[in-house]
Amino acid sequence: MRTWLKSALARAYAAGGGLRRQHAGRLVVLTFHRVRPDGEIAQARSMRNLEVPVSDFRRLLVAMRARYEPVALRDGMVRAQPPPRGAFAITFDDGWADNFHHAWPVLRELNLPATLFLATGAVEDRTAFWWQNPALTDHEIERLKHQPAARPVPPVAGMADKRVAGTGDFLTWNQVRDMGCSGLVHFGPHGHRHELMTLLSREEALADIRRCWQLLQEHVPEAVVPLLSWPNGDAREDLAPDLAALGLQAAFGTRRGVMSVRDPVRWNLPRNNVDRNMACHPELLPWLLMRAR
Image 1 (cartoon, rainbow, N blue to C red):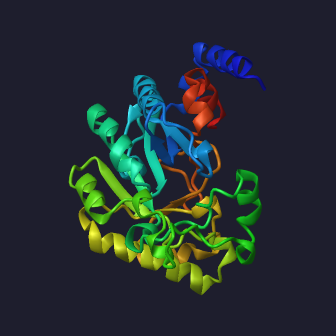
Image 2 (image 1 turned 90 degrees about the vertical axis):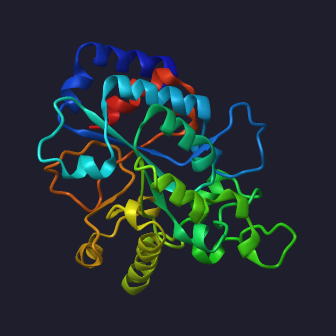
């Protein structure tokens, strides 16, 4: 559907009070990945659709704050009473360094809380994700997600040790602690190796999540939240008792939607992804919100 038609339909729905009624007393969780400088020359990076220019990021958050009550995700999860109007929470996945360099200054300026779900292998081991290969198209990446044996080795900048690859792409523990000390930013597990949990055995999946959770508790104990983000949104409902035993309380997937404090579903909660196209077309924000049901 064309951008102008989506925008027109959603604006009409919002003008009639549809969004206000739809989200009253509920929480809309937004998901970002990377926030990049404005006007950046296109580089040979995969998954650029998940990168949002910093000015678009700021404009979208200002627009959300005008419509909804901003809350920290952990606070929105435990409220005894739902907010009288719709609320929103900001989340990031993976652990990219640009979250610190470009997103964090905006969050601090606007005094908006956020939760970063970290794939701790990238932070702790400085290991590139397998899809950080400029030879891969986004279509190929989607195809290979569920074919681990066929994935290429992550690119290495002239060195044999893959730990060196992409070192500057990821947050450091010092940067994590700097954000955590502010009280605005909290951190939850996103798996250690960012593997799809549905491809792992029960033991492997739990070991991966446990390692991630332990590293977060070790490095930034004052800012952790007992909330998991499933890599790629591939949820494992059968792990719920084990995750609870680790001290985790809920998990988020990637399906669109909203949640309430009384939502009985706790291990595949909805989030709404903000991609490059949506962020670059602010008129599409009501469309994203209208589809969050």
